[in-house]
Amino acid sequence: MGLIIAIDGPAGAGKSTIARRLAKRLGFTYIDSGAMYRVVALWARRQNTDFDDLHRVGQLAEAASIDLIDDRVLLNAEDVSDALRTPEIAQGASRVAANPQVRRALVAKQRAIAEGRNVIMEGRDIGTVVFPEAQLKIYLDARAEERVRRRSADHPEAPVAHVAAELADRDHRDQTRQESPLTQAPDAVYLDSTGLSPEAVEDAILKIVRARLTNGKEFQ
Image 1 (tube, rainbow, N blue to C red):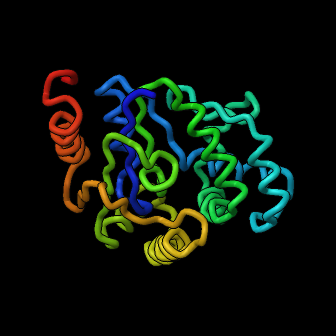
Image 2: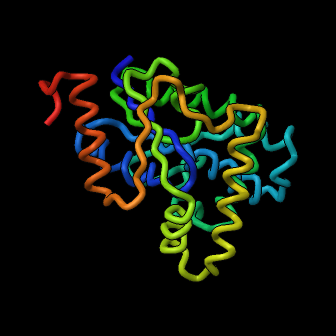
């Protein structure tokens, strides 16, 4: 197994943006675990399956062929990247992520993708469940009002109050679900991104990477 950097944290903390930037900077493979849950939600919607139908949605997760190629996401060889960006699918992803069968299926797929590679993976249980042996774990956070502001910027068509309510609902589901709840791993480095630019967060994590993994010798 190669080097693994796990980035966990709540919605809107900037995990995807930072993980993509770091992967490009370090030449690592980027694995967007959230996109994989959105794929399952999308397929469930296309199959007219309720997100809370545990058995059927679990079957879909097990059967799904999911490929991550650069910034594109493929479901059964179809590029579904654009279809994953709707608020409905984002909320559906949170609901299917509470399904134990879905989580087991996708954890197995995530581990398979990472096999033999240097990987940056972000999500909500990467350092605690998917890769508890990761050489570096970051818990990326931000104050609630900052996370609402970021989400509102991504979805300007939605009222701010609606975005705030959805984010609070997402936080509650992520933190209280029985299967792999969102929590900071004991050995994770906590980083609050409130008020920081993506460049500043990237630089802060790169300093940790150099100090923890390479003593400044391997990565530029």
